[in-house]
Length: 156
Image (cartoon, rainbow, N blue to C red; front, top):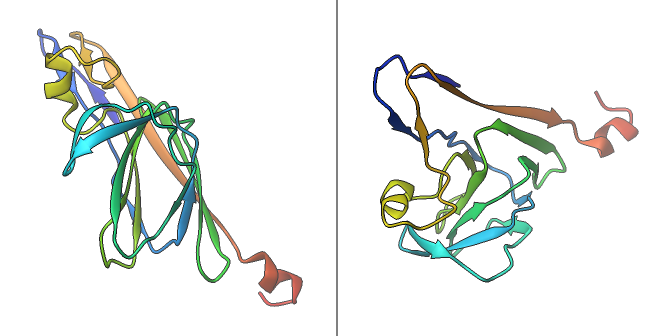
């Protein structure tokens, strides 16, 4: 994803990918977990962010900052998928809807409600302002990993 500001004025920007997966688990390293009300981030928390995110029947949403851009996902049948986010995607949302059979791992450039939080002076929101003529880029690479047990048994 690439955005160029062709305007003669600065503009705010937020980027993100919002995929969902039937994976049962995702692992990722981040340094900030955000407190939130409903699905709106409020402020950074003092709590250590979870590293392992499981699909749970009751559901949850976690807003995380300062992640390293890597997230391996594990499926019930042993398959795996590796996510690698690059560029402006320093935040990630891990969302598991209540009762749903999927897990979202959403690399984003900013925390939920980041524009309003930034306007209030809350640091670390990830909101960017593009100068005229500037550009910003972000990418997400997904690499599937075959079930290693099947290959060991001689299955294709």
